[in-house]
Image 1 (cartoon, rainbow, N blue to C red):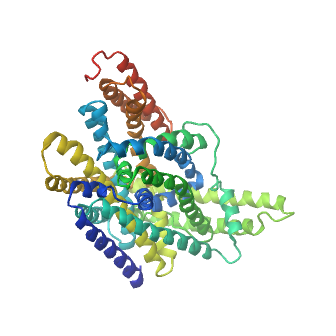
Image 2 (image 1 turned 180 degrees about the vertical axis):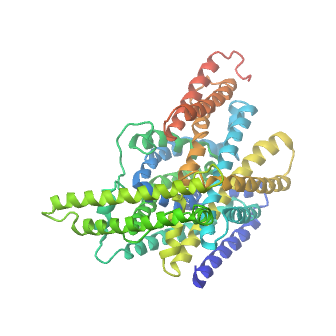
Image 3 (image 1 turned 45 degrees about the horizontal axis):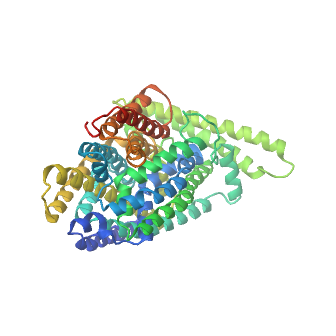
Length: 566
């Protein structure tokens, strides 16, 4: 990065911190710190909901996912609109009128304190792991930009954001979200135009789409009914529907958002807004990743985008072998480049179908040969490692492209947008974790008589504790694969089971606390068994968890003569 880029990043981050600190002055009372006094307009709440999800994971992990696998990930969101409509008609008015701070407070009223405590604990575990992944994403970028190790960057980003979150409350978080969403949309739009402008002069957008289509990277609907496939129409419509119901209806980080709205109608509108903007936004992010893939058809990509892994092997006894593979990789790229140019030049032209078919075959063979060399490079890095560790560079693709090929000023804009998105998402998640810890544990079990000042202080200390925990998780998250998959995989181990408890609470009048408690434990256990003994995709974990909790909880409730004993 050059001086102008650093100035843009520094100016934006200073403004974000100053803006958040200024708004924090109105968050000294419990209701103000955790729920913004239930005073926020629907559009601010809606943008905050999107900003909480549109973290650096989305910009780093989703673009890298699209580079490697294409647009198939968009199917993950196909169940979202229906889920938002269902939730806006059910849980939004219920939770809002119940005047609760957390979603789990209601479960004590419906069942008992043990069900409330267990569900809140499940949220804390799943979201604590998830925020660790959210910290990992911008840390990847920092490590590339500054040349620091990922350990240093994890704690630099995580603890800085934790400190900011301790000062501010949910009102500061929400208005920061609104501002950074504008920067993100601007950054994404500029990024797409710059990528396309970097194509060779004789390669049009249509040609780029033809190349992407040849490798099946434009697939947005896969009607295959295969439970082992992560992204199909059915996993998105069914598994995604259950996941979105659980995430937006049972996860405190999202429930807390619509509880800050001025009224029930404004809370509903914020979710409906998210329902119809989220998919186009995700499409844009994925499309950028696909265009980066096309760009690297004509510009040589590195053998591995993970610079720390490359530096490690270059200092190892395998350095000469890796250098030889790099030379082989460059030759393979030149062959693919020529094949891509030939195919792009003649793709789809009238009367060229036979030639076109031949050239696509040549291109696909060249692409396959390049990927085989790349796979050997990854295997060599894994061999050179002293630890049993899988090296995955999918999260390094987009930041490497930004740093290497974006013009001065645009680099700063995009990095600022990613950092702002990361800080806002991290602070929102930490605030939700602190809310559940303070309300469901500290006030409920330790200090029921505590006043607002003490509870806000406890919330700030809980924020610090969760920030440190998340940093530790982040150290391991970057080696687990695509960050956008990792964060949703963590959540899917718990979300479906949590949803099942709320289904029992809202929809099964005969359900008892005993049924809900043991149903939840059985649901979580069933998901873990399914993950260990089957190959079903993680989206289906949400269906499994919800189904087991409802069935087991209902059956136990039928045999529960006491009605409330656990």
